[in-house]
Length: 139
Length: 139
Length: 139
Image (cartoon, rainbow over all chains, first blue to last red; front, side, top):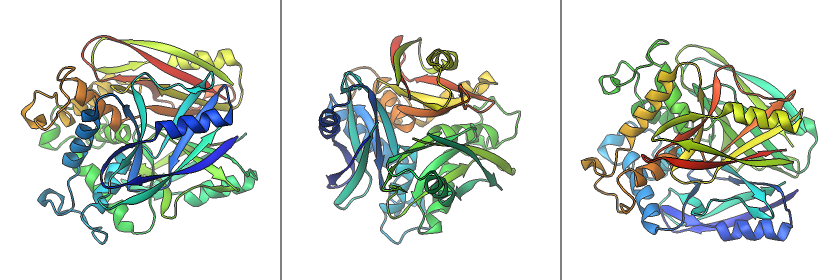
């Protein structure tokens, strides 16, 4: 069993790829057959496996979530009560609930069994810069 | 490998925390390094890791999902066909699809690697009281 | 540890059940206590555990997601930039982000610990026929 915590630095909402760091961890562990589980230790960002070919896909994903869950100062979000930490905070919790806090990816023949176009992303939902911790667990 | 099934009693829509029961299970198992997986055996409630500090966060989460997926008797939901089990049933299935049926949380140094503000919740989507089963699997 | 890759053929958007194939894999492996993890190797379809009793539930789920994320040629989706692969492509990535790329289901007494009404589905979001790969990992 192998575990580590990596840190992803973010500078505002959007998708931050860290596939190479997950692959490096699997390679270093030297495991041929196994399962990598990722867990993010926060409630206002999340994890996503998405297309890593066209950057517009990430842009559009972020744009969709912004429309689905606008900032708390948008008139449509007047029902929100939790407003202490700024207009981007409660929508960040909602976006995190709509996506994933944990992901599991099989390891086959020493490599993550990702599809050709799949990358692993930290999906940041807050506006200000953050340092996000992701636990990697390989067994 | 350790497994158990716990029951969470619910009294209408909202988030029901059971972090302490998951932590108790991990402590009793006496495992230092591992992975806890949670699986909910229902299709009209779900699992969520969310902030356990301000109760308004849970309130707002529930309010958002109610707006995103109104009851079947709301005019905007006229396209729904499955109505046998009441106006809260099909929206409950949809909310369950939008959140998680399973979660995995690493165990480090004998403890769940939850972030400072993270709690584990059963997210109930039905109106009437239910007894919900969650399988805990630790390896 | 047991692994395999299964292929699910799809003919347009909707839910395709493959519970029996997952159960068969678990049975063949002959494992009494364990955890089955499923991982889909694509970014425009996803995995779902949902009710397998009334087919209208699957119909309504698909209808809801179509309303939540209309095709790119719908006026409400004018903000999308990634349009190369047709009007169903970017909405497919969004629907995949809103649902699951991986699922974990405990195995108890040699069987998947699914609830009475739970089935395992590939949720296809693209219009044209596809062959989708799902990795099954049992440990």
